[in-house]
Image (cartoon, rainbow, N blue to C red):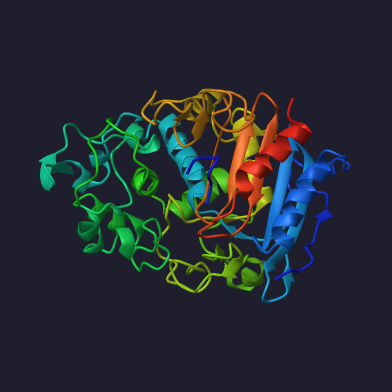
Length: 420
């Protein structure tokens, strides 16, 4: 989702805290200024008006915390306030971490960036496309094999199977609309590679390399991580990324003893615009505590905190290393954060690298500098890294669907306070 569009009157909690448990944050956040007060007022207003239940905000500048606050409630009905250690479903923010995992395997020579996906998942050796012609559907062979590069850049032609002319094909295989909102697999009782093997048998939306199509691409990459490493995705990510970085609150399923730290999901009510508690199940609270715990979705499955995710982003901002821990080489990071698909996303000045949306024109994403990168998640979480300004910015909330305009307004207040 584009960085600009990402997706009761109760007193909010707004507490500035230091970050002793986040290694890159050895110092307390900077003192409040008149300009940081604009951030306070914005978040407090959204909570006071009932548009969101709560949020966590963390901003680093040149590796140091300059702003961290919690607002409102992680569980409004349960009277549990938002705190810095609150856990959030980060959905598509998982994609960046899975993409980094793939790049570690690329650097080891176990995966080639231009390698055919069929080398790892047999059903992808020969794929098909559902082509719309004269109001009819024609199934044609893909013109070439789908590659790892295609998946990293969302140019494989693979969607979430919600388009009208292919929706029934995906639903028949328990994907698309039958998988929550398409990307959801936390309730599946099979490993993710079994699901991706099935996916390879269904016609895709577009020919490889011909269009930017957002969909199951990174879930397929998660399976490739498993195949190439010989390890389940959760174990590989813990071994190579979250473990070395000290991201101890990032995992695919919440430890049962930590369930009360997980923020409740809310949704924007039609008509009122107020946040109402989302239902249980795949299109609401999800199965992240009580569930099969079998499917590790590389595209949308992780749970994390603002502090943990900021540490991962600081590693990327710093060229693949933080506090002496190197995860990726500087050249791999440069590949990931540089537009690799030209104008496939259109003329709006936004591109896509190997796992991140890129800003290629000033003004394409608010005040973000050219060269900035980021993304967000379906539950309302969002992040942006601006290397020119030295900024890592994370906003965590749980709204699905999110009918507010909090994200672009939030970034504007951050830039007026900390932008160089």
